Length: 203
Image 1 (cartoon, rainbow, N blue to C red):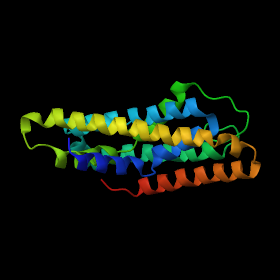
Image 2: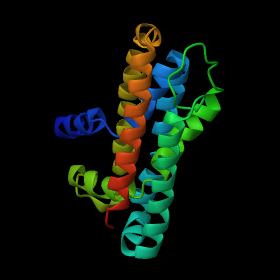
Image 3: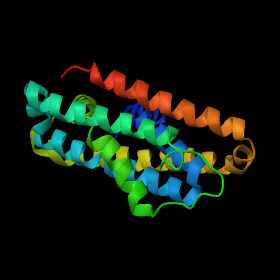
Image 4: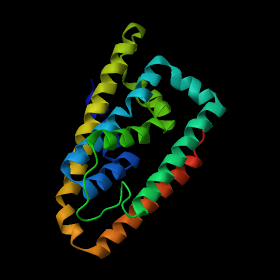
């Protein structure tokens, strides 16, 4: 495994995206434990896309405009739902004082769906992994599996750090109603913007 792949993967994981925003929102709203489940869910949501890339299914998704559109607009609808959850009083992503954390599996499931419903991830892995293969066709599947596993481990570690950092700032934020309102509106705006960007993505 090359250092170049590790650096590339780290930069990709570190860049703020939908999963990072979700993990930050959960960390701020529900604390450390929920943030870890959010990171775990987002990481598990990568698995179907990684498998699709390894098996070549991503090429089918890329070639089928209808299938791509179905998955894409399901993702758009889900992101808009998360935006509403950020603004809604008592919503799953709203930052409120004295709220009870959700069960971990619910937090993880929501995080997984964010990535599962993003059709660009399969195509992303199909583009990211092959340049770092040895070139031996017999080893391609095993090498892509190892690279994908490293990418997922890196995602889990970085997202957990993001979430734990956000949870650490939670006590300072919950004391200010103004900051909480600003955060909830900001998260809603970000999810809505991500939904809009996804809506205009092409296969």
